[in-house]
Length: 299
Ligand SMILES: Nc1ncnc2c1ncn2[C@@H]1O[C@H](COP(=O)(O)OP(=O)(O)O)[C@@H](O)[C@H]1O
Ligand SMILES: Nc1ccn([C@@H]2O[C@H](COP(=O)(O)O)[C@@H](O)[C@H]2O)c(=O)n1
Image (cartoon, rainbow, N blue to C red; front, side, top):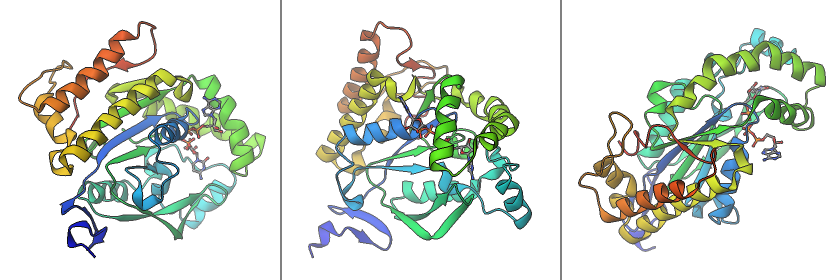
């Protein structure tokens, strides 16, 4: 095999002699806001869904894979819908952080699958995540933990009104997650709604881009897809060591939420200009909001 193109060596993804480190995008939002659907649309529009896992340039991970194992007493509560899966303590923050930092270092990681019917992780059904060029990490509390929040190069918040979310959650949980109507409504009123207000909704302020109406917002999705495509094109031209993320960190800083163009590369500037120009061209209110102007773009 050509030594310049070894797909994986010592758990590192190496392509053309370079360690591949991903551009990490966080996708937060309330339950059933459309986070997974938005990620799916992004993947589809980038032509990723028909590719083999190992060939994909863009991969998506769910925060559900980082629910912590429950004790026997917690499991019994969960069965009756009396465990709070919307509280930050329900997650394994350390594993989430370690997994994302491994991916950022170009390592291949394995994550368990989550089973909503048994409220547990399936440890022997692991999903292999190759670093790829872009990693989407979606979940209700992906912006809650400061250390994890700081890892993202770009943060999206899917903002769908709570009536719509509840109307979507009820049939989904009954059909796909093995729940009955009473249980779904009880859990929603006891845990989901209060936790959304206390822990999830306040993280909207950390988002770089807010997507009202989730997957219905085709304009916002198109803009994000364009932006990622620019990044991928830049990478295929210059390789991962001269990634747009790194160049962006040179050219965009924002102490007070304003864009500042410094000494970054021309491609980064073009990509950013295209994204912001497109946003300005859209006169309809409520398509894309820039809240903090890529404060966290690059490290
Ligand atoms: N724009 C939409 N229109 C209609 N149904 C939708 C839309 N977006 C998502 N859904 C449905 O709502 C449910 C929750 O969507 P999902 O993307 O899984 O949300 P989340 O990942 O935020 O929990 C799913 O059953 C999904 O098919
Ligand atoms: N065993 C579990 C684990 C989680 N939940 C609920 O899932 C929601 C998060 O997933 P979304 O796809 O809706 O973002 C969260 O609100 C938990 O209440 C559950 O019901 N059971």
